[in-house]
Image (tube, rainbow, N blue to C red; front, side):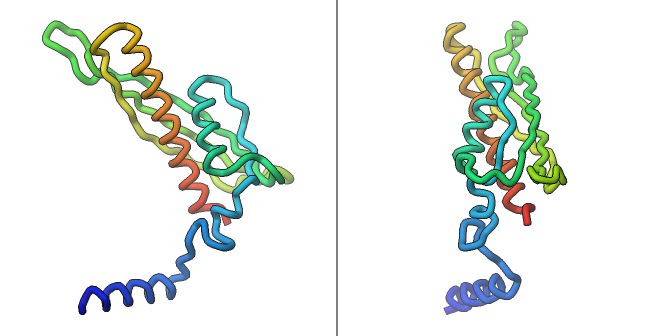
Length: 156
């Protein structure tokens, strides 16, 4: 009985506060679909970042905004054996972004997001290189998702 009342109270509270689903009619998600031109990628990490942004925001159609960004990824040793061999690395990444109106150049949103990924160096050189590339790709996707979340929360 109480759980039904709690659910009803929560629904009423959300309706009263002006809550609107991001991907609902006239939500921020639909306002950005196909409206954002993302700066051209310069690195492999940029390509993974751009691919994820395009998946989330849709391909360019009627461009209304320009999104500039800068990715920084640093590798830090995490697990070091007594023989001073690093067996695990953490990749710490930061994406700085600026969304501007294409017509006027006015800044609509800007910010910085960060996250991390890691990989193991156990195994062959080929396996370690593949693990690092995979971790970098995962990190770029996570950073892109964080940027999209911020944009959806801030773009009017």
